[in-house]
Length: 65
Figure 1 (cartoon, rainbow, N blue to C red):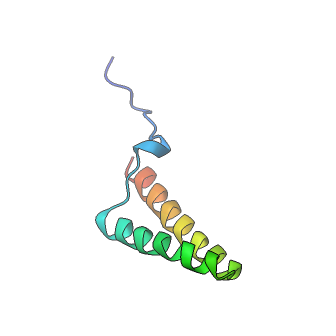
Figure 2: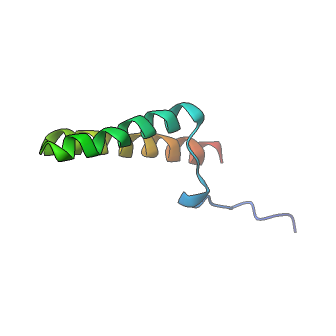
């Protein structure tokens, strides 16, 4: 009768909090610099940090359900 209790969040429904959004923006700004210098290891490291922030955000969002 009630609402949909098993409502699942879609990945596009999840937003970063202000602090994490700022971190991601700073990290993304560094990628072209390192890519231009051919420092692929640093680019991969930065991309991994961004992915980790998104994973933490998704886990926190799903934990709240």
